[in-house]
Image 1: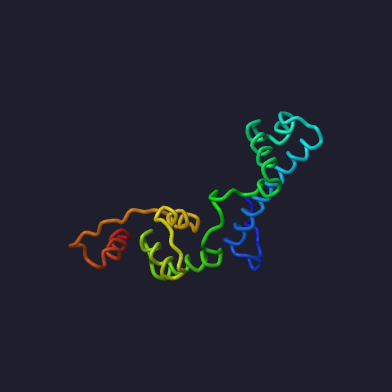
Image 2: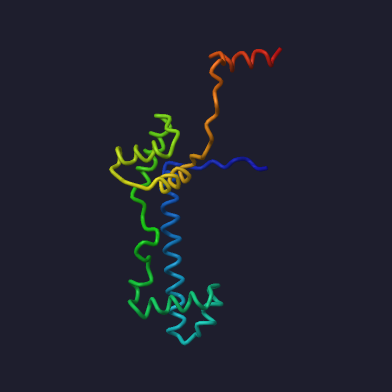
Length: 162
């Protein structure tokens, strides 16, 4: 296994990088639609153009319908198709720091924090998605035996060395 490469992280946060990647992925989808329309303009059949772009004939037909309905404007993202996040990448970065600093352990607490701090309302399911994107995982709380001594971990370490 090779040496870990050195990378300058001064140019963008991870969230900003991921935001730009998603934006470009979206632009590439629109570009592929335009390639398809360009092919049809030049007399290439739907079937041939679909094969060239690696899409199904149904997808190509749908793109053509979108184009015929409204041109460029109809090739973009549809309303309600997973638009932009209500939180900016910077707000998500701030949220991550607050979660760590305040030791927030539940999605419900995060939901309340987002509403209070940023004035944004989400469903609990969406908050879970955001937390997963921020690399916070699920874990079950563990039970603490009520009669366990407070220094149980130290005692365990001490006894295991002997």
